[in-house]
Structure formats: C-alpha cells, structure tokens
Image (tube, rainbow, N blue to C red):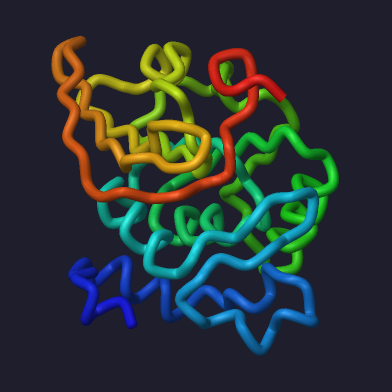
Length: 200
C-alpha cells in the first residue's frame, strides 16, 4: 500500500516492513493494525495511518548518525520507526499513561536508543539539543519557537500546521540560521497542546 502511493525510500520501506505495528495497539484492534487508516490508542489520541508514518519519515530523511527529537510519542510506533533509522531518539509525550505504555513496548522490543520524557512537547527537550531532525506528530497552529531554536543548522523539522480540524504538512530546513519551508500535503492530526500550541 505504500509503494503505489509514492513512498520510494528503501530504508523507510524496510523499517515499515520490520516494525510490528500490531504490538503498538490494543489487542482488540489487531485485525485492523495494517489497514491504511488511523486507530485509537486511548486518551483521545490515535496511531497515524501507515502511509502518513512512512511519508513523514521519508520527508524527515533520517541518517544513522543523527539525533532525533519526536514530539508526541503516542503508542510509540513512529518512535520505533525513527529508532531503527537514527542513532538516538528523544521523544516527549504529555499524557503519562501513553508515555508509560510506550516505554514498556520499547523495553519489550529491546530498543536501547530511545529516551522518553513526560511533559509539554511544544517546548522541546532542551537538555539534548541541538537535534539533526525534529518530527511533530500533532497539528499545531504555528511552528513552536523552541523547536526551531533546538534544530541544528542543516537540520530538518516536519510538522503539521493549520487549524484544529485540518493541517498542511510543513517541512522546514535550517541553513545558516535561516529557515526554508516547503509543504507536502493536507493532513488531519490530533491537536498539539501546550505552551506554544493549542490550549487544553
């Protein structure tokens, strides 16, 4: 379902084949795990459809020597995809129950290059900045300034930006302190809630 829709990166296709998506959702949804649609994961949050996970990962263009910041851990599925590609992944989730469940999955699957933090993702994770790549898996009214500050020079940031109901996928590249923005496609994500996002 990914190749006919234009996903070309051999690395992304390989990790999408490798990471067991069904282990990141509740057992009663296992029959739908590989369908190309989002699924509920509790706390009014969702796991993104496989195509959107693959597209955002391809746009991010992660290399094996890079440090990645992910905002919105959710089930941890996208985090695991990133961890297969990057040297290390730092992921921030504001909902404690989701962060704890994701952490348990990472341990069960023996990921040793993921660190999880519970908190406001819109302020990033300054302690380990700068990051070569930043991925935001929730829709924002605008790009949070702390994330731009924590992006390394030459780095990329992929984020859905728009209204509460629909967004456009933005790809920001930082070159010599200047930001260059392109857009990919319309999308619909849960809201990015926090200091530099939507109010709760």
